[in-house]
Amino acid sequence: REAIGDAYSLSTTTRANSECFRLDASYPNYCAAVLNGVSKNLRSGDVLALTFATWQFSPYKLHKVRIGSLNNIREYTLVLESWHRLVLARNATMILLGDQTPLTKPGLQCVSTSFNQDAVGACSRTVEWSDLYGGHLRDQMHLLERAWPTVHFFDPRALFCTKQACGAMV
Image 1 (cartoon, rainbow, N blue to C red):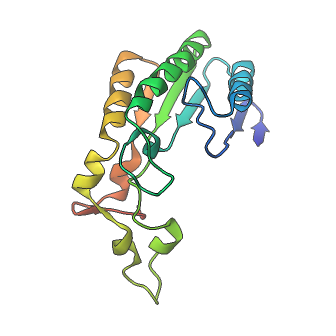
Image 2 (image 1 turned 120 degrees about the vertical axis):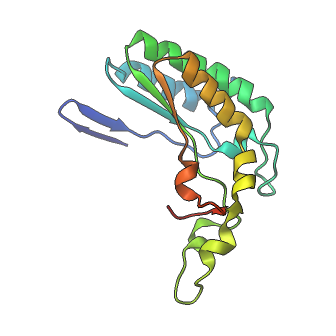
């Protein structure tokens, strides 16, 4: 999808389970098309924002089919290095986007209603759990941010946390 107006453009490219963060991607043609599209359109002053689900980089099993690996962090870093070279060459900026703490239930079940006023609490995780989950990936993203001046890491987790718990609502 593309929205273009004057000198501004927003392009979103997504495909579930594409694993373009890996060197050996599950959809190599798709991942190559993403790289080609960004390479063709990235200009000086642009911002390239990249994100992947934190569960890909954690060995904690969230769901029967969702289990990641700490080994994926190294591959992701190598892929980010190639994106960083492109961003540097084009005098652009790269933003690495984190994600919120995974909920204990699907998101729609985490919104309080008159029938279920504690839905938010039933979906929350402790702050300690949130801090540990994905910590290795966040540490790596902070290292890259310090090493590469045109790269910024935004971690939105704190927006979803109180002093006691992390949940679905900001």
